Image 1 (tube, rainbow, N blue to C red):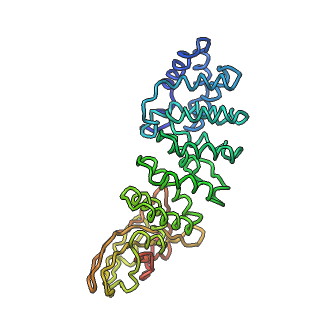
Image 2 (cartoon, rainbow, N blue to C red):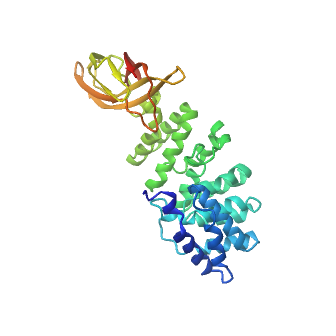
Image 3 (cartoon, rainbow, N blue to C red):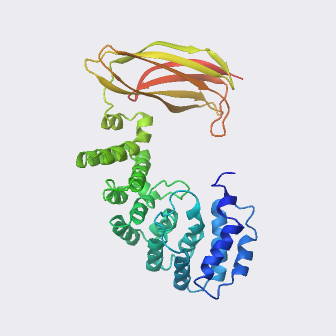
Length: 372
């Protein structure tokens, strides 16, 4: 069983530990009743629903006054171990407390933001902050701008991670999808942060933006690269451009030094077998030949055009490699494409195509059939 399985993250032991921590700061907390309520109905729930279930049990047994209840939860988190709970599973034990603030704290903005500022030192609060961004965008963004300048890296990271427009597992923030300018102002404060964990969040955030505003994302990344030529910023820019690179975006490729290549051609393409059954595989091979007058750096990918159940065509890009070619130089590539059915991808019989991409440019398409 994975360490991240719901049974490992929220179980009887975790609930008992939470009860002990709350009891240590609140003498009248009814640990036995809380444990009973938190365990009842827990078993069939998924991870986030388990956290919400424990949150509601806390609400039933903590003081009715929200500010008083939150003071108890913050104190129950214990000493700061410096990690922020961003690696491993231990930090998840604090997730119900953050859910408590997100669920019950919307009518208590300042108290809630103060609590989140402390709680995020123990477990990343990117999910807890999002209801406040939606309900109080101006006030919450002002607080996030303060955290972006904070001495503590965990609050700086929250300023980026909490405002990601397409945060995985999180509800999208549609105003930021439509107009990313408010969050770019935060990223501008953080893209050269001394902590890799913060820069990784910044890169992931800009990668989110690139899905809806590729031109804006490239412009921001280019500005960062021009303002700070350090290796750390170069890493941030490269990581932020990964989706656009995979899509073959010419501007993103050029930003990373992979411009040109128009005179590089595919020769001796072969694909065997020409017809493959579902569950089988094809192997294709080819050579690249440079007709450029100068050395050129290339990103070489291929796109699989596959038949879909509805009769349409899907296209997915896969990496082949990077190569630098001198004038008249050649480079060989070979790849096996398998058609085993996956939980994330289903193959259907019909015409398929292999498209070779050189710095995002289509350099040729070859067809073959997949049969039942």
